[in-house]
Image 1 (cartoon, helix red, strand yellow):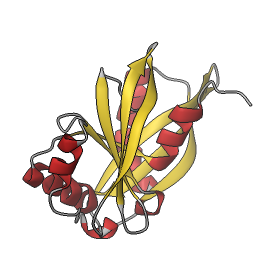
Image 2 (tube, rainbow, N blue to C red):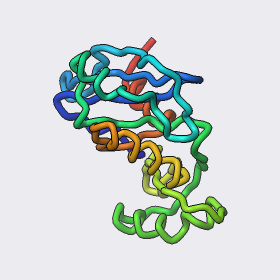
Image 3 (tube, rainbow, N blue to C red):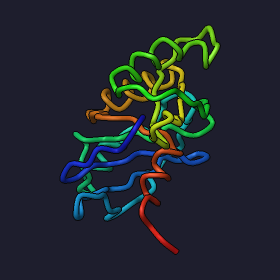
Image 4 (cartoon, helix red, strand yellow):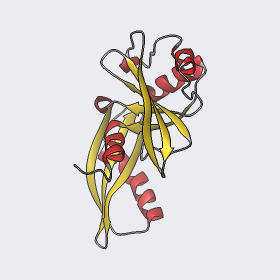
Length: 170
């Protein structure tokens, strides 16, 4: 959930209230640029990982890449916490986060955890930590694989927005 890694071409899937949307991201000067987007016909149940049947064929018919799909996790499906850690190496930070993640997000459900560094200085790190139910992510991954696509990565809505607006002015 940390970042949207760029390749030559990637399809980003995201859910609306009742529809699935797709955007094609192309590399442009080491950053991503939306080259096209479309609404996939048919109703979708975002909470169930239940995309409309035939949506992979629909993407292929519109020349979108189905091998490099990034699924955007809707903001209502994950929890976030802003936290601070003292200065340490990045490897130590990863280890510390692994120890602290379940304390940060107390739950009995199986979760996927991740974080992104918001600020790094001599005093330490400010992180945005994420937790999302594994069942939700697995449901979408299995549904997309069943249709013939391949999810390469997941990204949270907030990270996608930060990535898109990073470095923009006005």
